[in-house]
Image 1 (cartoon, rainbow over the protein chains, first blue to last red):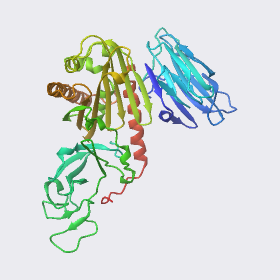
Image 2 (tube, rainbow over the protein chains, first blue to last red; image 1 turned 120 degrees about the vertical axis):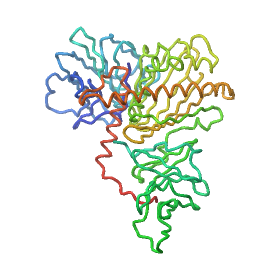
Image 3 (cartoon, chains in turn brown, orange; image 1 turned 90 degrees about the horizontal axis):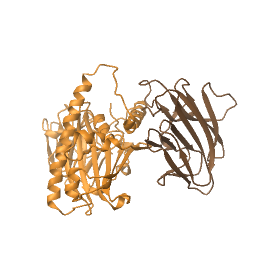
Length: 158
Length: 344
C-alpha cells in the first residue's frame, strides 16, 4: 500500500506537524509510532525518539522525528540529498516513510513530491520504488524505516 | 452533524421548473423553482408567517406565493406581498441559498452564503460532453451519508456485492495508492492483466486480458468522481475504454441520503443497446448498494456504544476521509453560525 500525503494533509500538533502515525485513528488500537516534523531546538529528543535534520525550502532546517513504542517497533531515520536516480528497497515487514525537505522528487515515475509531501509504503506491495530528482537543485529528503520487534510484521494501522 | 459550507447536488436540472419543488438537504427544507427567465432559485421552504412549506404554494411570476395565507416572496427571499394588509413586517423574509447549475445538476450551498464560491463546484463536464454518453440514476438511500462515502472509497466490496455486474474476485487482491491533498482523498487501484468484469466486457465488447483500474476521488464531503476503465496491457490509461462515475451524495438527515448518479463512458457512445444494458446493470449495482447499506445502517444502530469499526490496510482511504470530514466539521463548529437572511 502506498500513502501519498500532501503537505496540506498533515496534522498540526503544537509546533510540530504530524506526517504519519499508527494507529491513524487514535484510541481504537494500541499506539505504535508517529513521524513528525518539528522545529530544531537545543533540547534533547524525547525517550524512544530518533531525529534527523532536514533542510527546508525557506533556508531553515527542521527535524524529522520518529517516536516509537520500543516494545513493538524498531526505527531508523536518515537523510540525504537526491541528485540522481535512486531506489528504495524494503522488506515486506518493513514500513517506510519518506519526507521531502525542499525541491521535488518524482516517485515511481508518476507522483511528484514537493516540500513536506510524504510517501508511506506498507504491506507487501510495492517493495521497491524508484526516485528521480525533479528540480534544478538536489532535493533533501528524510527516510524513516520501521520494523516490528515481534514475529508479526508491521503494517500501517488505520 | 453535517458540513454546511459546501456545494451539494440538490436536484437534476430537469426536476426543477415552473412548479415548486421541495427538498431537504442536511435537515434544511429547501424550495427549488425557476424564474420566468429560467434561473434556478433555492429558498428556505418555510413561510416566515406561520412556517407553512412554500413548496406547497404556487408560482406567480418570479415569486412564490404561500398556499396558506398568500404571503409572496421574490427570488431573493424578500416578501413582496401580504394579502391581509398593505404593510410588510420587516422580518418577513425567507433565507436564500446560493445556486449553481452545471452539466445537468443543480448545486445548492446550505452554509454561509459569503463563502459560496461557484469555482468550488466540482468538474462534471463529462455529463454534457458529446464525446461521452451518460446513464443516470437517482436513489434515496436509507442510511447515513458516511456509509456511502466508505462504500465508494473501499471498492473491494465489488468482489462480493456486485459479482454479476462490475465485480470480480481479483479486486481485493490488488493494493491501493491513497493520496490526500487538502480536502480531496483519492484511492487508486491498478489491476494489471485481468479480464474486464461482466457488465463492462459486454458493453465494451472486449475479451481477454487488460489492465483495469479505478480511482475514487472524494471531494469531501459531498462528491466523488470515480475514474475507471480498462486499457491494453502496459498502455496509458488515457488510451483505454474510460468511465467517469459521478456521485453526488446529499444528506437528507442522519439516516437518509440522496444519491445522484451519472455514469459517463467514452465507448459505444452512440450504441443504444449499450445504454440500455448499462441502465439496467447499473440500476442493479445501485440497488445492491442501497440494500446493503440499509442493512449496515440497521446493524450500526444496534451496535453497542463504544464498539467501533475494525479498519484494515485497504481502509486507508476511508480512514483518511474520515479525518478530513471530522476536520471540516470541527472547523465549522468553531465558527459562529451565519445569520441567515434573504439572499443577496
